[in-house]
Image (cartoon, rainbow, N blue to C red; front, top):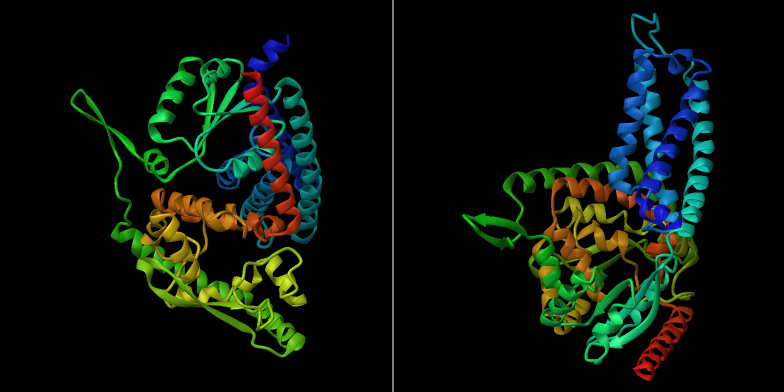
Length: 472
């Protein structure tokens, strides 16, 4: 029975997802039917509303993330589904209002607007509880059926600390039980005793040999990404008669993409400044009142083709703070600054940089010149990220943190460049809202507690290596 459930795990997740969305729709439709009984009858109104709700959930799920309890943690799943669901509720509600405001229904104005807005909000509150129950409950069910993968880490050059730190956050999915060097004589035999293999710090030839071996033995493989891997992942297969070749094209924006992206930058930035102007005024008054210093902070940053520009932000630190990295509990951050940094309000003035053409709304993170020089010395490929304008938001800004390593930020930025499309820009804009609901992720700074945890991870890795060698 347990083996059957294990093989059916994907189907179980799909069934839970379908049940969740049916329940979400039922909650909304039941409450809206109080003033609109046709919503629960077979009618044109109910059919169009159902299609609108499920189509909106599907499309927004592609942007914010789906019900992937087998891959992500519960909290981000709950946030992403609730964001998608709220927007789907709004669109479905508006569709109902439109369909009930016409000559056929004799309504020039929808008669229950205020009351049904309250019913829709109540529906969303209940839906949030439904999402939490299905996410935590589904997580509990799934990991009772599927145990964590027993993982072997194969180490080449470099430090394993960052990899181990990332894997340990997903203890329900992965359990590292052994670490071995790439040259250990019993490596191939040891692979057979594990479900999955993590490869870290291996060159292309070494990775290829182990990849082929693991594939032949039906073992899952996870590799730390390098720049060549990113280029390969965005390549395409071509057939030249009977010869298969891989084409890795240089990614460049077409003329129509350039025009649309620039127009979108101007429109979004202008609207952003107008909409947030009251908030900016309040923050400016509070910043000035706290210490009497300047409201706007400017700093030299680097954008496309290595050009310098002055990036604008609301000042969040003392004027004599310097340019050292922010640490947890940093006393250079002002009281007002701590709040506006938490919700990224300090970055709103960058819309001015976008209108001036120095930045784009979506693009690689704008770095300081000295850090660009330092990182380029260690990683020459770091300069590849300046093939596009720096952006206010992007993959590195959404998925990274202040303490994310320069290499990982580079890979996130290059992912954006290599996979650029106007649709991706659209998705990133919506995903930026997700970060605002998780301020602790985007503002996590360098702190002593994290450093102590990192030291502990290093000791754990050393213990695993020693145990591996003793076992051999």
